[in-house]
Length: 258
Image 1 (cartoon, rainbow, N blue to C red):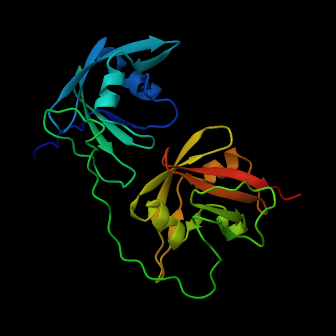
Image 2 (cartoon, helix red, strand yellow):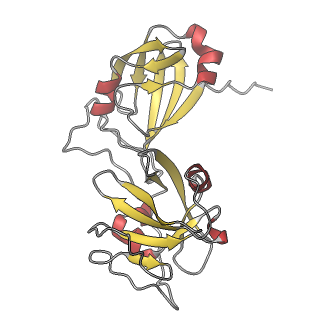
Image 3 (cartoon, rainbow, N blue to C red):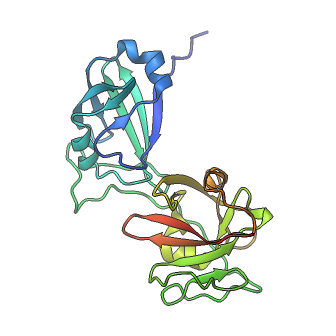
């Protein structure tokens, strides 16, 4: 029986925070394969183009440094992009990029991305039924969509899509993004979203279609970690504001449960 080919060493990174100047390699990957990596490596993509990038050691951590900025700019990498690095030989990484839609990003053959040429993402198309029954009062442009007993007095006015939510026990592991907010922000066709907390930290969170007869898109994997790290308790009221310029949801605690 023929042996199965040994899988190529690989690691992934979700682009959050200030990823443009350099990108840190996972410590475990360096521990396992650092001895075979040279000081200079090559990054390639499905376009066939390649970039020379320097590996830098700084305070015990390894980074893609010189050359990484051009790579990130040429591909027009955005916050929340998922990158898979496959080590195809001792000095070459093949890089696969996935956008927030969950689909692989395709780049033009042999050409860099420009401001006028966005990486193509094929949206996941799903049919959605109208939500029946009692619904919150909303007007995404003029007034925030409220999913709590009242609109908090301390909330700031905004023209961005926004909703308020009083956290309950069933929000421990997931939060539902109802039809109007998901459609207005374009999240209805995405597979993930990035949350921004009050400290300016970024958290990638998976979007999950719940198995129900109604439209129901949920923030799932990653939400629980976000909630715990920001010490959000059941009974707290939070503002979820979509920031178009960053393509993130900014989460702010408006009222704290005593």
